[in-house]
Image (cartoon, rainbow, N blue to C red):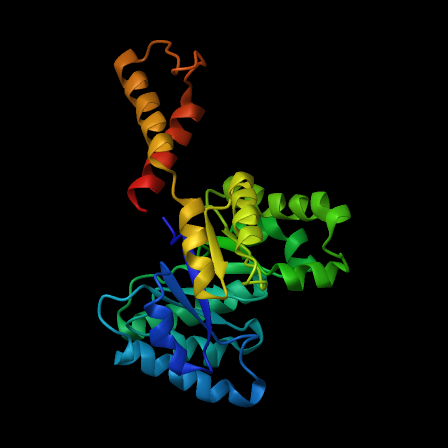
Length: 280
């Protein structure tokens, strides 16, 4: 199961790495892509390598690195070493995944690493229409959404009149991840980190749509993600009751506390709720 929360940190600001690690986020993403000015890329890569090579405190949260599809070779060289927990591939495409897979194979062999999880960000129309092929790639763990870039590429304005359209785009990503047997996708963040009530509301909406993780750009967003993503005690108790009734029925027909039929889909949902509750 992927982390519930991923906190982005610009890789060009190593003074913030330890603060991010102490934020309570389930995972930290050191961002080598948009957050780093071109002139500071080499310095940022060196900071990422230094963090993974020993500056990262023991017992801290997993460290992921967002790499740039336009600079995969130097970004992967800096990021893939002992201490890395996963890669976020910005502007994901079939071509980018193929290049990442080759680079990962080399780095994993060189450092005797287990396979590094890969999350690809859907950030343009080309990726959106190629989702079936992208999600079939064997190195992909799941997808995320770079929603600001995606909506910009589509020339789609976010607002009350386009809520349905945006949700349809999100559902395409959920659908293709599920069809490919991948982990549930990672929900997009909100750059309006001061409006936590809106962030809470949209996190609920994204969970309802099928996302099971969310990225954050500020530590204040992290507790909101955890609150929404973790089923509460009542939800966990109801899920356990469903499982117990199913087991007791020993293959026979049974119903839940409200008289609704318990079938395989209900059991899958109940077990997922229990897994999410136990990992909170």
